[in-house]
Image (cartoon, rainbow, N blue to C red; front, side, top):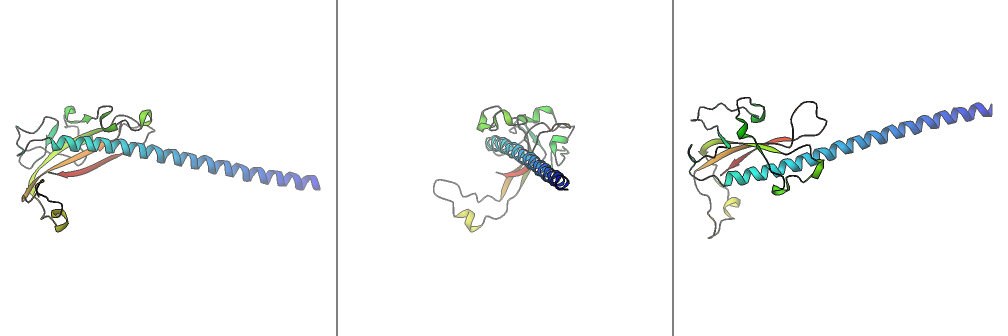
Length: 182
């Protein structure tokens, strides 16, 4: 009788141990996925910063002649139909998808851990009326910097992908989009 009780206790302890191991393995997988997503997000942020610097270098006023070839003209008068996610647009010229070079703004911050080089698309959306600045925004004005009291502003849409968006990859990729007013 004692032998049967000991065997039953041994089976119960084995099942509890296996459940604990399975829970630990699941936690490790979740941690790995979270870490992979964070690396992808950081690489995407580096590409976003690079795209913002590119936009800041565009001469004003913006015309078709002054717009760089890597920036797609999606302004109302351009006649170009631009999708919400330009990275899935089959009509987008390949030259408009810019890959961030290795080492620029530490775009390879994940080292060899990132899924791939980040890429971005900049689209010029047009010149529109800018919202009236608040008192808090105007409080940063000084004699050395313009206060930005212009009634209009140029708007750019920047779409960033942290790596390859092909199906079948087991790595996390992050795609995000922002509007940039200048």
